Length: 73
Image (tube, rainbow, N blue to C red; front, side, top):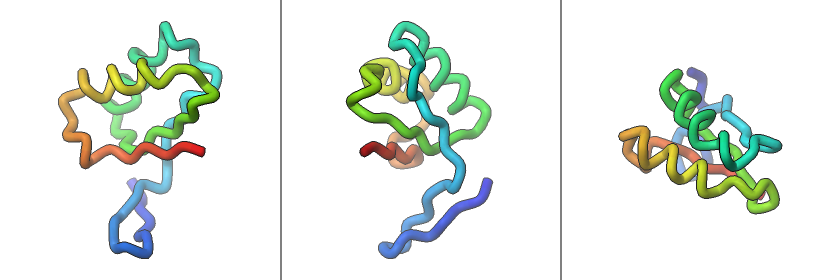
């Protein structure tokens, strides 16, 4: 995976998984699968209405939260 170095020195993945238009009932499963295959950047917005599914997937993944980037607008 390719990363970009931010001004504060933290490296952020250049490729992310977006959850726009994923129904909340399917979001956990979709995000969990994305995390399993290596995604570490998740793009979400309150407008999408599926925050709970994203959070549940992150918790269920067993991946430390500090290793996952969440971007939002």
